[in-house]
Image 1: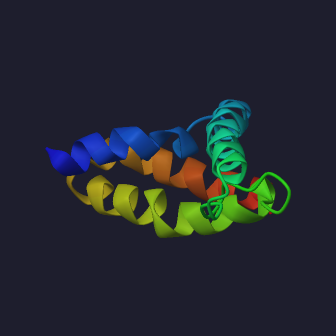
Image 2: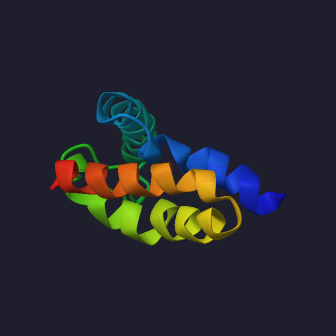
Image 3: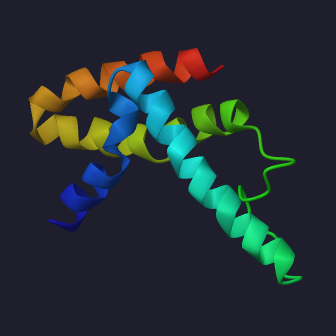
Length: 97
C-alpha cells in the first residue's frame, strides 16, 4: 500500500510532457519559495530550493532515473498496465535533456 501511495506521488513524470513540465515548474516554485524563506531567515538554503543556482532541466533526468523510473519498472512487473508509464518516463527523460 505504501509503495502505491508513493507511486501516486511521483507519477506525474509518466504523463504527457506538457503536463509533466507544468507540474514540475509548479513544484519547483514551491521549492524556491522555501529557499526564499530560508534565505530571509539567514538559514542555509536547502538543496534544489535556490532559485539562482538550481537548473530544473538539469535536475529532472536524474530524478526520473533515481525515483519514479525504478519504482514504476518494479510495479509494472506485477501490474503490466503500468509499462506505458515506464515508456513515457523514458521519453520524458530525453525531453528534459
